[in-house]
Image 1 (tube, rainbow, N blue to C red):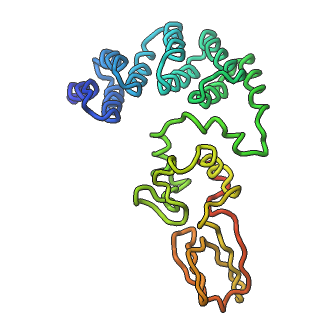
Image 2: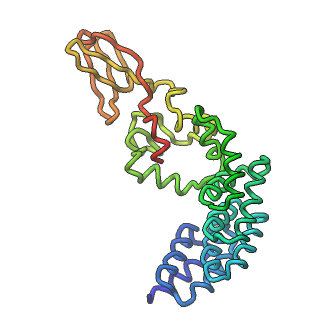
Image 3: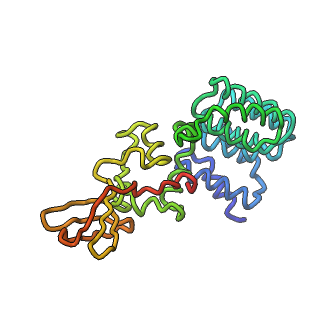
Length: 283
C-alpha cells in the first residue's frame, strides 16, 4: 500500500498516457487506497473523457442510488461518447425505478431512431439485461425489426461505437478466435487472410462488419479457398497463393505453404471462406 502516493501522482499527471493513468486509478481501487474517492473526483474533472469515465464509476459507488442515477442521466445528455457508453453500462446495474425510467427513455429514443449511433449498441446491451416489463416490451418491439436471416441486421449496432481497446485485446489475445493466426497487423500475424493494417481507411464499416459476421458473402480477392481432391482420395484445402504448369501452391489454415503436383490432382473446386462462419459468436 506504500505505492499509493506514487499511483495518485500518476493518475493526476496529464503528461502520462491515459492508459497508464486509468490503470493507476484501478490499482488504487484494488488497494482500497485511503484517498481513492478524492483521486476519483479529480479524475472526473480531467480533460480526457476516458479518465473521467473511470473516475465517475468509482465515485458513483459511494453515492446514494438516487443521486447516482441523476448524475448518470446528466452524463447521458451532455457527456462525451465514451462517457455515455459508460453511463449506460452503470445504469444497467443500478436496478431502481429511477434508473429504469432513464433507461426506458433511451430505449424509446432507440425505437424512434433518435438515439446517437455511437451509443445504440450500449442501449441494446443495457436493455437486454433489464428485467422491467415495460422496457422488455419496448425492447422486444425493437428486436422484432431485425432480419434474422441477415447477419448484418443482427449486429447492425456494431457498425458505430464500441470500444477500440476491447477490440484490440480480442484481436491480439483471445485464444478462441486466434485472429493473429490468419491476419497480420503492422507486420505481426499470419498470411492466411488479408493484411488488416489500416483496413479502416480502405474499406467501409458495413463491408467490414459483413466480412466478420457473414464471411462467405464476399471473399477478398486473392484469398479464395481452393479445395483439391487428389487421385489418392486425399483432400487438401487452402488459399491459392500461386500456380504454374506443374504445381499448385496453397496456404493452409495453419499457415503452412504446401505444393501439390498437378499430375496428382483429380478435381479442384472453390471452397468456403477460411474465416470461420461462427466467429462472431466467439468474439
